[in-house]
Image (cartoon, rainbow over all chains, first blue to last red; front, side, top):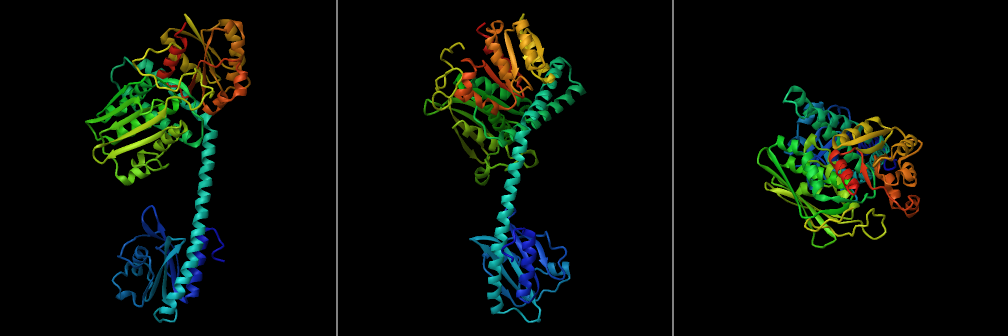
Length: 407
Length: 129
């Protein structure tokens, strides 16, 4: 019965009730392992005094019985809780429950520890014994399977929900882009009128509105790019000009932090999806600015040929804070951000997606305290022939020194 | 004065193109849908046509196909504006390429428009004139 249900809360409730009955115990509690916080979390405790326990987090260490069991992944039998150093009396004080004897067992399913089960006080007043411990382990293994199944089911539902949100966003893309276009239109026209005006409250206010409009626009564009698989729209693109555009776009943001932006290009024309590569650069340069400390920051955007002639590299380098190896592992995961509330965790995921859609790759080198370099290694044109490329450019990056053919 | 025709059902978008091009010495003519766009094109014979892809009734590609057939607009350079790049997937299919009568738009610009990029594209597309 327990193993069949897929609703996690119901599984926990019935498991604890069944365990308390099977063990003839006064109370049973289950703590689930919260992988993100690296802690145990009480979900529900089944017993007479369980209020105040449902969401408390417990560190996985040797300072509590449940923490010890999670840490060492082996069960314990404690005949008298108050004589065990690991026992934390606070729980009893909080709940009014008087703990006497405890069995605590890890909940392990398919080599994954899902949590810990605690059985408290035999109803006949005796301490738990070896027979109880064996029984508790059997109960624990059944419960672990049930929880594991329920958790996987929840994860599946969550993934489906995310996919639905993605589809919804993608479906609204046209409408949203029109609104963004209108906002940009209005701000461009205001800008045209404001250029000569002296520093006034209007210009100061306008700068703030404009900056935040750009930030919002970037988030929305990242969401749209992430939510939809697309073929790159290959067009001839003057890559150096594109880098200069992006640097210009982020100039204000950089200036506010005292960060200098410089860009240079050895190449003239390549054939890429310009809007896509623009998104990548906005994200990488924006991150680079954020990584720099106030004052003295330097961000360099360089374009050059790669080892093979058919590819080229865009390097974005900063002299900012660098990354811990652990952060380095996660940066391309969607929704991972080291910027707290400032980041969506989409920028690098989108960048990677766009680069891969081009058949390119993204490389990262980072030294903590010294800076980070992202390198986008991209084909200079679409792969294969007859791909509908507009101007028939050969897939070789053109060097700046070469004479450019007139289009 | 060089003439640019902008065909877009969004008035804000037309206004945007006007604001970008007028300071560069373009006379900007507006049309609010595909059918009106074709009429205005015949009438004014613009040097440049900027066509929104997604419009109700007659869409931007249909306007494009009409313009390249008309003798009045044979020399008109054409830039497509698009919100949803996926619509351009047709650009890579041989069947649809046939529909374009052997000619493709001179450039594509994605919305939201970046004014600097847009200016550059317009300069490139019309530089041979």
